[in-house]
Length: 244
Image 1: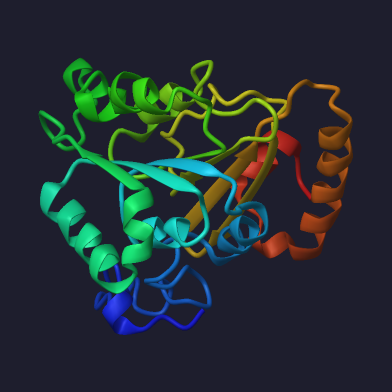
Image 2 (image 1 turned 180 degrees about the horizontal axis):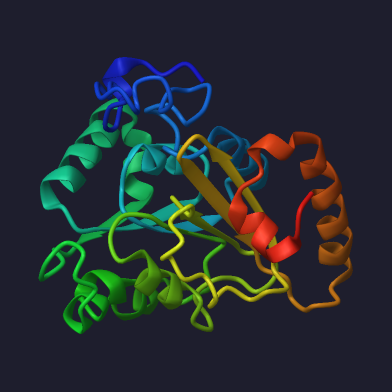
């Protein structure tokens, strides 16, 4: 995807020796796309459309990408300055999308990696239930968990009524981190997971039931297709579905 620099949200000009060649568009989304593994970005390209209402924890370049595709986007962010910077790009470079973006900022208390009850039950984590659902009041078509307190946010997203049970889409970035407990995600949901170098992105699709015909067929087709690209299949897929 061609990405004019003036439309960047964030930067891909990483100067450390580890990330310089690996966080670039051949492997990851550009600064006009989600900063996720390229194959996961390609999956979202096929799945998302203008009828969908999306929600995300943590703003970034993906927010701009979502806004160009979905009907409405709700964002929860913990860094006020970063939220204002991202919103400024959208308002100035593609203002026609600004009106369909609702965003909330809540700083997270305590130490960065404390995972204390204070953080897990913070306004940031609980914003979907306490602030967004009273306004939108319908299950979302898509929910993304990135940023802070991802396990707590994942559990919030899995609560009844948050995500559509008939083919709603859920995404977790940096899912290679094994301390991210994903056991709250129903085991019968469809899943794909892709990795490059040290990054992995996992996407689930909710199935109405374990025997749903569409999901049964898709599960088989996904497994066969991923067998053609074994080198990019992430561990989150194989731990649920077995080796391809």
